[in-house]
Image 1 (cartoon, rainbow, N blue to C red):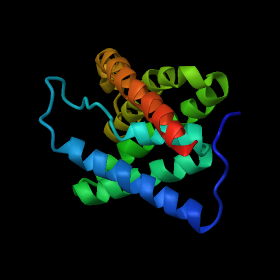
Image 2: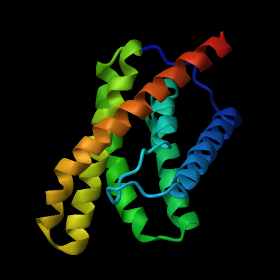
Image 3: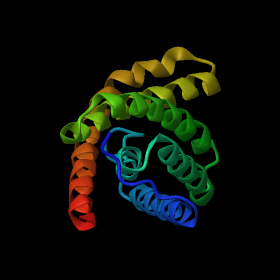
Image 4: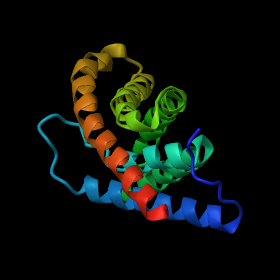
Length: 171
């Protein structure tokens, strides 16, 4: 595995807090962008941070950053229902990212994001089906898969680039 040297103690907590703050800031800034023609579709730019943390720091640190961003995003956006949808999508996508982390080489990190974005959307639709008590929301899945793959390619390439650039700085 090609992870960075593990950081422990206060340094680890400081890094996790910093990554959570960065992800939350990106999430809140993206929420201010105009809605694209398909309702509910976003680029998911905060996921760049999650992918970075997953591949550089590890899965448990990525889960902490993701959980912090999801919870604080719901609090700061003033939309508590987003907590249910984001948590369901985030947890399912985190599980997929854990599996992909083991399968991908350092040069193929960008491939993780499109797959993970699809799982995120699927998790959100499962949560919506549970809340609404109807499977009718699954009719939206094909549109969300297309959007997830496109947005995931963008965020995946961005995460791959971020990892490469920060590796150069660290050396």
